[in-house]
Image (cartoon, rainbow, N blue to C red; front, side, top):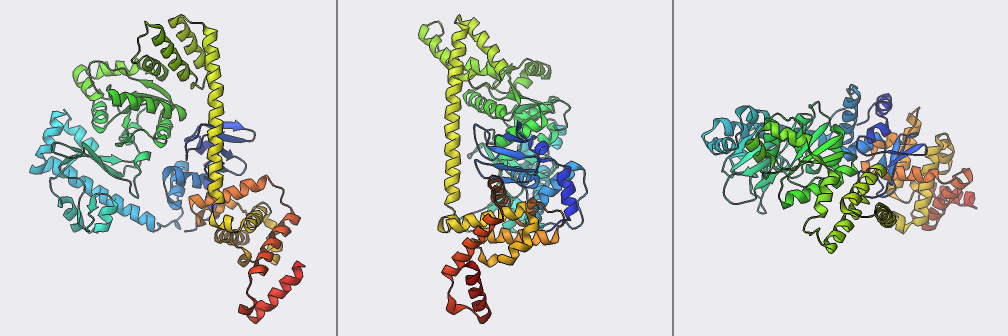
Length: 581
């Protein structure tokens, strides 16, 4: 649904794209613009450019592009109206009355209602029902207080295939809605049944206070230990964190990253509000960027076992890429934070936090794993591992400190270590550049594989040139329309862009091609932004424009079926032939 132009203009003014994008990526000045690692695909060198003049962005690696609204839609997984509301809330602006929910927004609202109702059902079952005794016993054994159970809205799913299903159906929700919310599952034969059965339940709450998903832990019996909601219209597990709704209220600019629900709840109950966990998966780049929004320092508090340490290593890399300073708790005498707090108390746990090691110290200790450093071969292997690690440190000062310390501790020549590290850095840069070039080439091949561009390469290029010219010279619309009708466009997408562009120009005083946002999806806006960005690098003048239009006219004249024309179209056809000669 269209929103007032002055509102969208003010919205973008209050949400400068460079300021907004910097919440999700580390921006570096590149001439008049900024460059950053693209938050929408994995890369080693920056290929995403933020254009401050046009308040837009474009990634030359994956093709993502658009304005601050597009960026919000993609990064937060929101619809157009939801992204506008997100930015309006951020800027303290009131949404206009015209902004009504679309069908997808209504579905999301319906799923949120279902989740809220289900959360009450699970909680009431735990706290009031005889069936909840099993869950109450479990939480009592984990030493959770009644206040904590209420704070987190913990619950219990009965050992029944249809208890929640029938309860929600009686509330007026359809089977399709319950399956969409992932609270029920549909079998291959079409039968619908509860997804969570005989499990303690952990509601997952977003930053707006909505119940968006659930995690369920089995108490005994068979099945996976944890069962988590799959992605739904209101939930993407790779973009949410358990307990961030509480952690964001903490005055500290640091977050504790724990491994599971119970660790988080135990740490929170001990007085540490600033703790979060991932949702049944390893840390993702999106979650790392989300944490950086709320903290400058992340303290990883994973289990001390093998899998926990492997997860720590991966988290260090992702958090570093997000620009967060990372520290690691060195836990002794307990396998996880929950056990440590129960054995040694909250005060000792705070000491662990305050004395936590930096990420590099953790990684250097890992380099010695499985080696006998008293032997020459052991020391050589250790130093090679360390050189590889130090070459990945982006800060020259930090790298120098660790090189000097490593040389002193191991009795080796410092200059030799510097030479080894610098050599590997150059090699890494060359490798990263090659990988990035391959990624860009792959994307270019995929783009060229577009059926339209492959079947009609000359016409496809001409259409893009016309659109780029019109976007840069909106006052030329009358001339273009005198020579060109939308029917001359060969490809459907470019025709639609041209039609919407022309329509906007006729009805808008202050035109911005990014105002097409309400008419196209986020991925389509990436294609439109690409047309504009590449068009800036080509001098498209009136003569070039005429050539582009001639190409489209020639294509139509070659492929037209004269016998199928009406009398008026027949006359127009010959007029066009005379003009083109």
